[in-house]
Image (cartoon, rainbow, N blue to C red; front, side, top):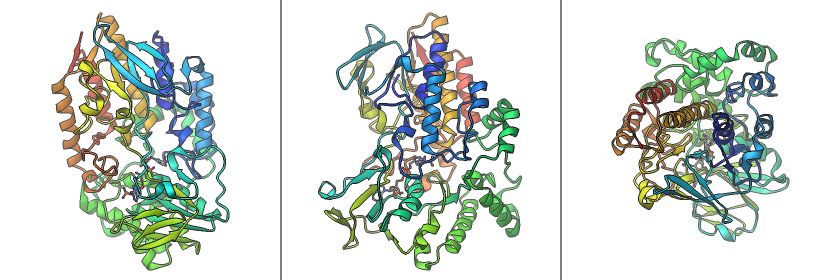
Length: 523
Ligand code: N01
């Protein structure tokens, strides 16, 4: 198994409990995955921690105490370490070990795995738990190497504290990472210049200490709460219901009142106010315009507010959950540079050049995201039957079946990858679902005397077509997001995650299992 983030930790626990010998190979010197790597100022989860947490162990979910509504990165990392200790996982985790190659040996029906320092392993099954957002994207800016100050990427942040005091900081990128760190950097830096290619929709997190009454209420029936969440499209948020009518079927006053109520609650609740926000462009525009109104009310300079107002549908790119983001642009030491029409021309030794002008900087922050979904796998020398490289298999987009498997790559399972609801689900809910399904599948193979399981090419083609058909019924194709690979120059524009909702997806996976792994070839 590759990766000791939240996916790898639970996979190890579950598969070991199923009687399998499991070894987890982790490139980092620590468990924690995403929460080990993404440690920029302000990094915290955007789904409430009582929901973004494991449900597999009742004692764990009862005993663990989150300090805030949305846990910060250090607390999430402590949680990952606690889980590793509590379930005695460390003895089967090999740290500082990056998987560089995995080749399927057809004669022996097993995987041969190698690390970058030449160690090797043999495995019947391989679980890729490397996370869909683990390959940082560093744009190929001219002159980047000649920049004289530090260049920091949000997803490969230094482990020692970064002192922004007295510095002129340039920051590129206004997705979730940029939106979380901009307010905190602005408080410390002498100046902060933000380079924005696409304006972001950000909703207030309303973070704060966890309300003990709410915690007690949820913990009184945690299993029931988790079950209700699993019936939600996103796998979380069951405490709030959408309005029974579509957005445009209610009066303006009623619509604005509900949007306002959700804005006050904070987080993703705004997107759940009406059922059609993500499927009807006109309904979506009502919600989008509500947020633009908030931006215009918060940001004092109308020209800056106008630049901060997004024009794409809300939710089309992942909604950002913020603390004080738009307010930050009222500070005298913060400048917003719009690079939507004229891209960054180059990085100079002491600044960033855009629109023919050099903006001085002695520290450059890249909050430029990830080569999502495909990047983590295609960077490995991963070869299936006939030596087929995953890079070649996925040249036109990430073919897969159920998001979990790839035809031609027997006994390989990919967690929260393309073709699953991963990006649209509370990721720990997705992880637990995937791993439970994989454990059941491996048990079925053993019970039926089969060595290998592999998606059929037909099932795979139909699945990918279905993922794209579902996306066409939503607002998601109407912007350039990492869901579409549109943030990476040259990447095929294919909609990768499944937008059909977690319950339907989980039911489909269960039905496949009930039907003796329909769509798979087993030998
Ligand atoms: O990355 P992003 P992220 N020139 O791809 C810009 C999760 N996450 O790290 O939008 C100029 O969203 C790019 O511009 P554009 C979450 O799922 C969660 O912020 O492509 N700009 C964009 O503004 C999230 O969705 C949390 O036009 C360039 C930014 O860089 C996902 O990770 C926190 C550029 C990248 O935004 C990714 O978020 C953080 C260029 N050449 C992340 N290239 C939580 O809250 C890129 N950009 C839990």
